[in-house]
Image (cartoon, rainbow, N blue to C red; front, side):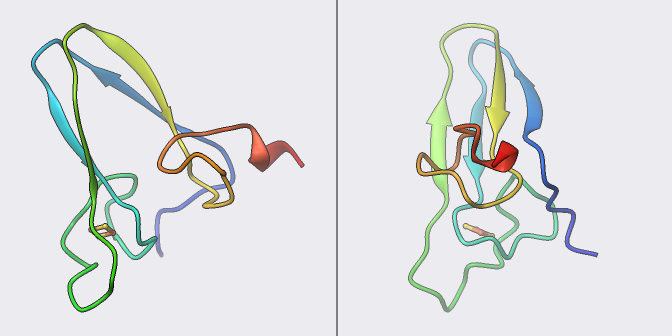
Length: 75
Ligand code: FES
């Protein structure tokens, strides 16, 4: 089971957090990088947060704005 899903992952981030989002689609712990990209041309997207926020991370891998949801899962 890959853990990817046809809807966004809702991630609650806190001020000071740094998240490494999977960009290769191979992670077994989506939407976060688990190192599975090793040997591919992909690298994780690392985002640091300076305030608390709710983040919608793409689960379907069809977003044009990876790693974030752009609503593509609805079409
Ligand atoms: S596991 Fe996908 S970018 Fe690291």
